[in-house]
Image 1 (cartoon, rainbow, N blue to C red):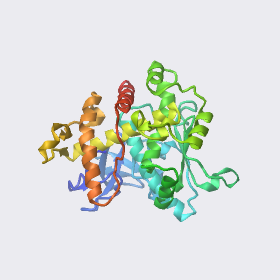
Image 2 (cartoon, rainbow, N blue to C red):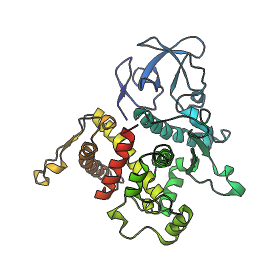
Image 3 (cartoon, rainbow, N blue to C red):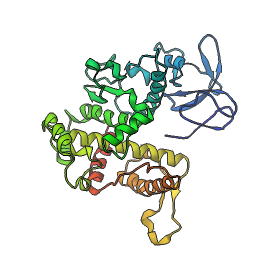
Image 4 (cartoon, helix red, strand yellow):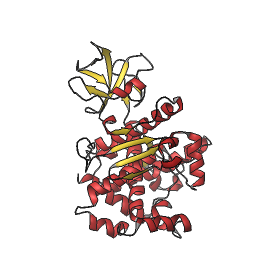
Length: 352
């Protein structure tokens, strides 16, 4: 995520802000320019950018305080570039559900931001039933016969159980699943990896390369899932996989690795805009722990350069987090096989 500033006072602002905390100017994110715009009111529901004079209006979901994205005034769509993909939203009569939905939307916008940055194919099912992407944000009341709604992907539909937006519920699930990392944004990045496997790999020239690196996706998924939950991950999985869950099936290996690629690139963009580098004072660590994040990873064509910037930064981030008594933000080991998988995903994305 890049660093934004208020166009009215130059004060730093965050991606989710609706007004500047310094000068109180109204703000909105424009997914065309990929900038946070400072606004002044015009007629009816329109707002004008104080710099360009261009007219905008907020996404319809702004009325629920869950979206700050803008739509050009002449655009006939009621929903913004991100919210056009929503198919099911929670029951807003429940205050708790509205709060959870707000957190879900924050994570979703960060996902869509990345997809736009990479210029990946991104259409809704209103535009194409076969190739479109939609989100179903459900509570367990939607589950059949009172069963739990499962987060997952199927044929362009990403379902998110909004219970994942509750910190306590998510931590309980994390412990139950014996996971080291579980976040809303991580769910989105993982599930959209499944979507892009269907869009970019399934019937493309990349399929053979995928099978050589990740394995044959024709392996029975149901049996693989049953085996994983009955017997656990493959022994010594840390040698070839980024996570235990990635061992279940080649599709899950792809989705897990895809999510990590997104974690890495987006975090590096933040570091780039803040001018962050790593240069340890303990010189005996050698130069391998030195890194200057001097290139935006979204624009970087060389994956090795991305890796060289990421490895020292991730170690530093974990160390700083431990000094605050918090968990590691990146509790993973990137082995040589995972590097090969990440590099493959990098090539696929850059080919679009």
